[in-house]
Length: 381
Image (cartoon, rainbow, N blue to C red; front, side, top):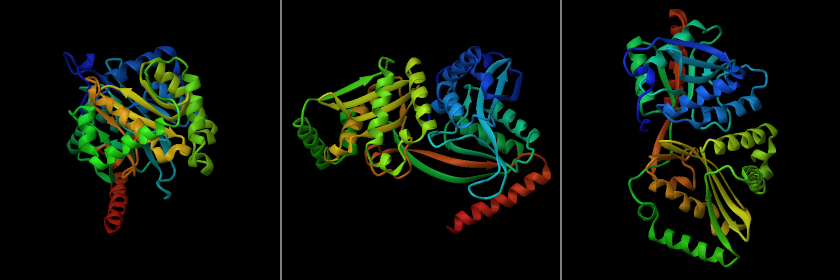
């Protein structure tokens, strides 16, 4: 992914003094700390709204009330230049292998730390040095849902090579991405067959016969609470609600969504798309805006109108992202091989999981054995 324009102030004239420390996440909820955090997000080399203050703090409030998760903060001459949530976990994908990892949850779709542009290598050196000193029970460092291209990944690979540090890419997948110089109409023509485009027009026309059809796009915070409530209801009204997978089925996830959408809207980081019929929403979409990227966070639609494909009709409107000079790409945040968006968005973003050796010689030797066993099993599968 492309990087943000400009360079972090601390990199302007000389090599800054770099320090890394793990902090209690509640300490960074103080107004002054949030201001520094939000400033870092504006300078981030790789955009990641899921680690910005307005999303990560509500997630920690919801899922880490005991405060196990720490925020590794890297400072350059006293300025916050990098941040990543970390936790020491006892199990590794079902196996009793303790490891340090970038902290994730079910609605966090990217694990890239926030790192100031120009300080990517300095950040990784500082983070890995911290992990060496604080290894404790952790046998290795595991980084999940990492983008496998761009300045941040290039810097990680370079630092691992310069340190001769053992590493294994233990998983790789590709998910749908929207990135093109084409106009929305030209992209739609290139992505979908003439037959499919004709079918979408037919579905739109038939849906309009059901009542007054209206599309709305908003980037403000007005009536955000009502919009969020409607979104939760719409998602829960379908199969996700029936199977217990809707966000409204979980109190902590509901609290996260309410707080995160409000925080994003107040900072101008949220775009809401709504397709309504006779005033009632039948498809809704939330995009997180983190220039130069955007992230398609959540979509919900009324399954009573499934024959009209309201979710696809809304994604057709979402192609307006291609017209924006400040948006270079939109990450679908979808699983690989998603049955709908993979056929609509033709570009791909590579996402992977790294496991990295930390600590002293014996610990790294043990990690090499673990990594060899994992990658060998994957090769056989």
